[in-house]
Length: 94
Image 1: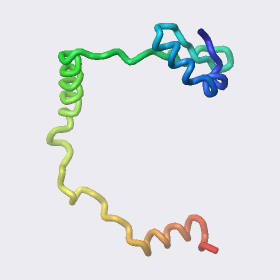
Image 2: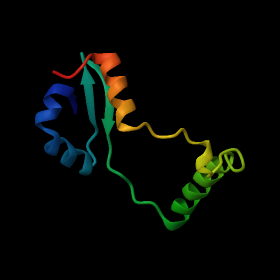
Image 3: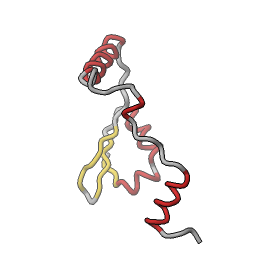
Image 4: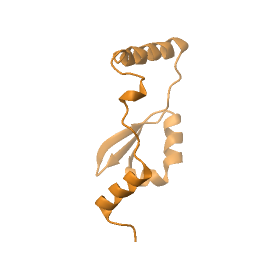
């Protein structure tokens, strides 16, 4: 089933139900396919664990490169500094 994105906005519930039944639902823009709706498949515990390991390994590349120390963070602006910056950019509030 091919549906224009504008039409899909009004028929979303119907399209989701069709995808859940196993029908192929493709959303198009200007006649060109853009997105395919598909139901989320249930993952086994082993598959979930594998995803978690991959994510942790990816995040692990930052270990030792990013500090938890707040000293690395820029200090917050005071209300007065925010007001001055706003006035410089947009002019005084009326």
